[in-house]
Length: 93
Image 1: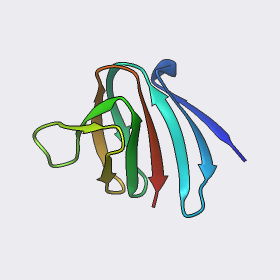
Image 2: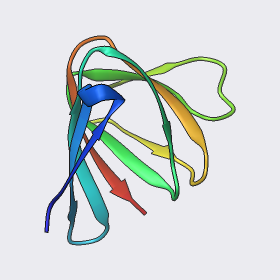
Image 3: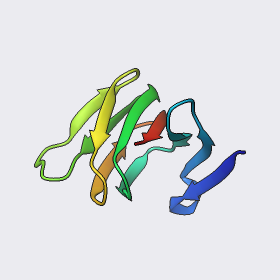
């Protein structure tokens, strides 16, 4: 079963599904600055474009390009900057 999610007045949209291993979402985001919160650990892979990510406890943003993955702990907030439209896959571990 698919679940459609929409955030930031429609600037970020995703479709949730159950992958072979974990619950997951695949989504897109428009150019912009965002702050997300997690309930559980996540592994986020950039599919298209790139994202600048500031993980908890980090001072600087790090750039992740297509096919690169970053990991976010559970119960934290993290910041993302999309300099252009980007797509991602998120696995909820």
